[in-house]
Length: 295
Image 1 (tube, one colour):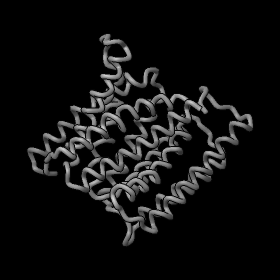
Image 2 (cartoon, helix red, strand yellow; image 1 turned 30 degrees about the horizontal axis):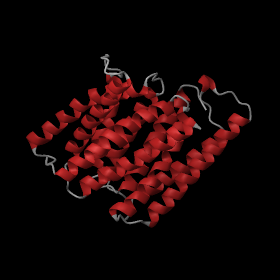
Image 3 (cartoon, rainbow, N blue to C red; image 1 turned 135 degrees about the vertical axis):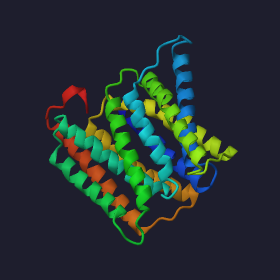
């Protein structure tokens, strides 16, 4: 139950990130590189405040590592850039489709053997993603889609590395602390080249701060805690529920259009997720071995 609650909390926060990012960029409240920089910086500040409170103000060396920080940076910046042209739901669907392929592929390489129903669910879910991005009048921006795929691969790598964390809060804080300067360097380059144009408003700063401190920083620590009890296949699959949450939020909060293509793709993805999770339960209850205490 604890793992389920942690996972659900993280997934809702992931959907909120897509909504906040799209809200800020579509409304012209901030540029994408500044949003990513502030998101990582405020996430680092919030996390280290929590670490300090937990450790009663004691000083400790930063946890995390540069490999995870690089993956976090390669997720955050393309993620923001892509939402200049993608809706909240479409972007989330592309993101977590790429996450799923990355995490399941690595899981297979490391010896995980999914149940046949998990394979079937994966095929259905990826079919929904392929339908969404297939060329046509309603297909999303190729550049935006490519940037979001890059973000998805990076997030998949970041999640896989995080499965070994023994102190999710301190690890996430250290990763954010390392990644923030990298994002600010990109903003500095954009400022020098004027591409994309760098600008800030109070609304954009507030949205980036909420995204960084709450739905990114704290939520990623929660996600790292949940990952200790999830296989790569399960962790990848459950994240495909995020696009539907993001799409609903985009419709309610941002007045985004619900297209037939998005509805059909979302149904296929969610159906595939449910099928795969049912196969996972059948594998565990059927007595098949689950290594490393992961369920």
